[in-house]
Image (cartoon, rainbow, N blue to C red; front, side, top):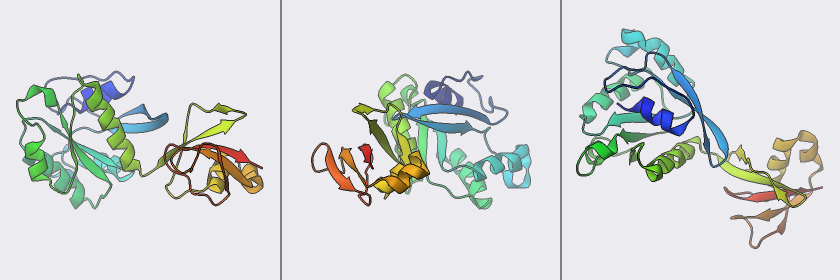
Length: 223
């Protein structure tokens, strides 16, 4: 279904790929950087009907899904959505629930809208067309994956320099939470912060400990 090719395009991992089903024989983990934050993706072999009864080693694969924070359902452009629904049904039967969306792989290989059939079949899920030949589509896929985490990204500023790598924190986090994430002692000592970004009224606004930060903020802790 093109999962391996997409995972390889998102990361530096080298994966065996092929133009046939079940090329992947075991779970394959890989890291990708999204907006500066490292996110682990794990490709699992295709599930089949009866996976909950351990057909095709389904129980072990479902065990991997139980520990996942989110799921990206992958269906190949032009393939019947019913094939993907069979996989979804097995996951639901196993009692696994997680934020998810549908990625339609090999979107460049069909005429017309590659997502239309999947959008009609799964009206409650977002559907995204993906082609490894389209950098914009891969970028949109990364951001869609990030949205499933439910986290926000905040960068720290020290002595005028901004950290390249942001920290990932839950929405609703405050300046005090950011400081505590850096170090518990800093969290106790912080009196406030200077903030640049969406949560500030102007660049470098001074705020208190309970100021709520937003995705994309740059924060300089004050103590």
